[in-house]
Length: 449
Image (cartoon, rainbow, N blue to C red; front, side, top):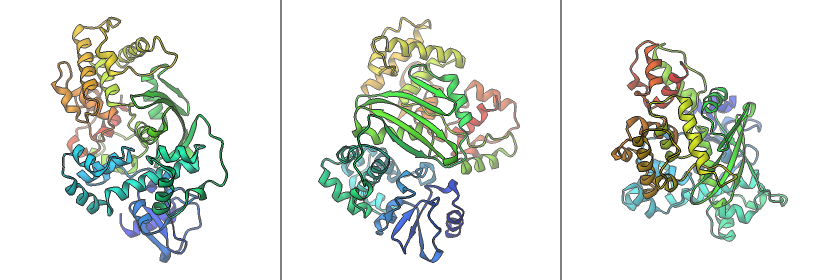
């Protein structure tokens, strides 16, 4: 964006630019979101920053009123797809690795990663990780009833003293300034998670309704929720759509708050809160050249994990949506027979089950077990293309898992029967030119059915 575009967006408080950039006011020493309700500062007193951490690094304090920590994140596809960006994404998820571990995971030397990160984001990995931890802590301080000690540990600090020192240094404000009174802790955490409008809740609602697994998920006219469980934590969330305020009000129950940041990040992904649908639809519309009308504000409905998305995809091979839904429901019910709460089956359970309750070809059961065994043995595997080496797992299954389990923005399910049917009913266009938003194209095509 240019300075003139920043200025126009700031003065109009255009919510489509919330989180895309930040506004620092030199006369007050505070930085804000472009939608801040405070009186508009004179342009001569304003500086613009692409990232909040750069404003903080220059000595500005976060606004207590508009809460920059609550802004939607800048979408990953807007930046250059570099190793530095991948490292930033891992830190943003709450996977607070040190530089050596990050470098090893990304397959580069730590020296190269340090140089690359500083080049792209203007500070060291350690500085950014501390800022990220403190920014998350600020969100919890202002929005939840968690104790300061619990917030410190949930944000990745091992001591309250270290937390207080880092918070003051990174955000130029003491944690105590954000908590005027002690709040009584509650079992359920409540947060607001913002998005950039437009957000087509009805389209998302209708898509989820056809695939809803009773007990595992729940849906109302204005909310969606589900359970989650892995080896680190378990719990549930319910997200309430608040259209006029451009956010979801999210209630979260979790048994281990050390993993709260990762859970919140996944909720944002499942609801696709960080998409800039205005930019996406402008690009698609230009490439489609009138081939079909676009559904405004369309989001990618995510699935909690790539494993769950893969299992759902295998069960959905060559059957209708209704038949696939019934099979997934049956699997979830079998796994939760001895439990009052419903969770999605674990890889080890499926891998070691004969799956005799399924009336389907043995080859399909074997594919389910192979995929589950692989995910059990490779829990940190991020390359879903490795699944293609498994008998019974084809490109459609892998791409579906990328589309909904990873929320990859550029997956066209060209082999999908629904996509083929939609394409047959519209004018021809070059889908390659719709990159890097072909996942959204896939959902736009499904809307034509």
